[in-house]
Length: 248
Image 1 (cartoon, one colour):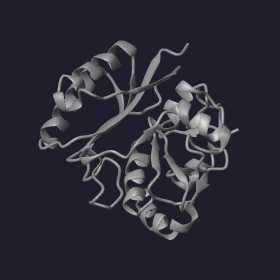
Image 2 (cartoon, one colour; image 1 turned 135 degrees about the vertical axis):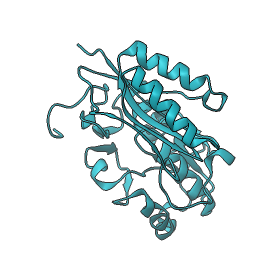
Image 3 (cartoon, one colour; image 1 turned 60 degrees about the horizontal axis):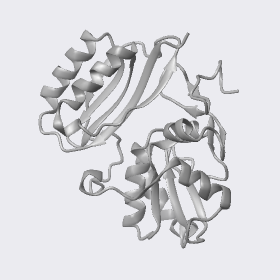
Image 4 (cartoon, helix red, strand yellow; image 1 turned 120 degrees about the vertical axis):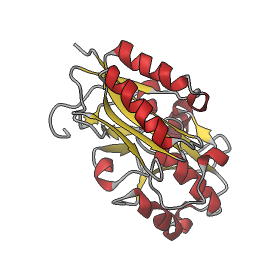
């Protein structure tokens, strides 16, 4: 019986009291017996936590009581057992490390495309204006091996910090195309889309909510394989159920 609720969410928002929040978030999450990871940074929050549904909902309500986090929109999935071994609350310079300080999503997000719109574009191979559409995987190479969108571009990066240099090296490959960057939950493809726009690509979108939101709204259409997740479930199928054993 799937009675453990897993959530993932992030938000780029300026935080000037990360030390105070670390203590507060740790206390509340422990009281609710949640496990997982909460990352705090001056640029925002990123979290993956799991627990009993009523306690997860209480934690989300607690987060949203802070006006800075009021727009958090967690993505949900279920599991039979707790997929995390412990609770970790960390402070980092970036909630997703890119080593590119000019990329500040809070100052202005890249345009996004919904799961259903991307499904439509990938089926046709073109966007609403007839321009060729390419999907660009911004994840690390080992994650891509578990699954990706059909015909997606994969630069086989080992760390997200390598993405900016790869983007510069592949400018011509993406020229005159509509680019949709994607990742697991949306955070990496958001930074990636802004960078691609900075490099001069005029038609760049991020997949809103990443692969997990796509699975939730569309399923596995136009996607091949599963989606790696950073917990003991290893990867999720398009129906958001954990895979059984190693990637099948």
